[in-house]
Image (cartoon, rainbow, N blue to C red; front, top):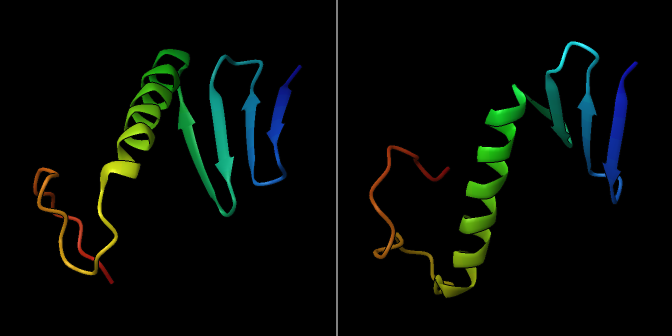
Length: 72
């Protein structure tokens, strides 16, 4: 039996009978083992806590480590 947890209509966490978690946000679904999801959630929480410290400007963020992500 699957269990689904919803948050404000945009996010859902489906806990499958097989033990895997399927996190859906809008059109994107990420698939996790239980431990992977917990680590993912903790990392996203830390990033969210740091986000208000980032200045709003069009240039690159100089305080964050360089990544290969390219702004479109």
